[in-house]
Length: 167
Image (cartoon, rainbow, N blue to C red; front, side, top):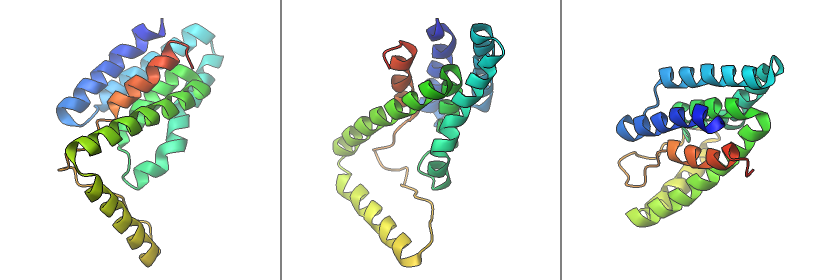
């Protein structure tokens, strides 16, 4: 039953991400309202704690990645919306599975586009810069690269086994 509530929001997020590289806040807000209603109808008032735990888990785990510009705000908000349907435990599973899928896609994209050496050099330069200066700076990889990853797709893929009860 969860498929009918969550999947339309995720599919819309993927489409928006593919078209504009942005996930609209209105879509996230609508999903959060639906998740709150779903949790309330499924679990009663304790469902709101489940909703809050699932929503806050990605924020707590991934906020630092956004700070260093390694993950977009829309991606974190999408994971927060998705996690609010699952509760804290399901949200954590979804984050892990999403990052596993993203890792597989990233390796394939970097190899396919032939920018592996360029990406490794950029990463090494970034680490050296941070070590020399002693200051953390945002990790921004130029978007011109052919290895850009629409993270909404791994989030969708990572949430399917959680929705289906496989994890």
